[in-house]
Image (tube, rainbow, N blue to C red; front, side, top):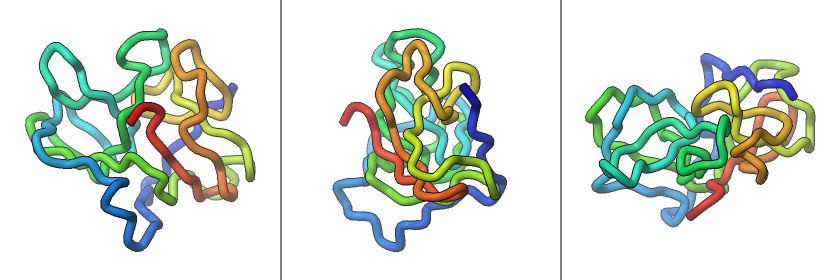
Length: 137
């Protein structure tokens, strides 16, 4: 399994994603989040955190991807998908491969399933672009 390194130029590539792909209002960051980090909402405090596939638990649920970088306490918008994104630098992904929640990098993607990230949450369109979608709406 290889972790996919997120590009410093990671961004939304879909020009106008449909409104039903966007989740906002009433969500706040429970930690610093980077653009396109896979995220979940923690039941105990209702805040948004980076998802992790390290264990098969609540943190392994991907409710969406951070629309931009957020600081602790900021209001958060999540893209639930499907949305097309620039995610990796050149040769960062293999075309047509499924993408999974990383078990090593919180909020990150990998090219193979992890303990908690057993279902695909996207696929590589080419070596840099991906289509991402939440595992649980």
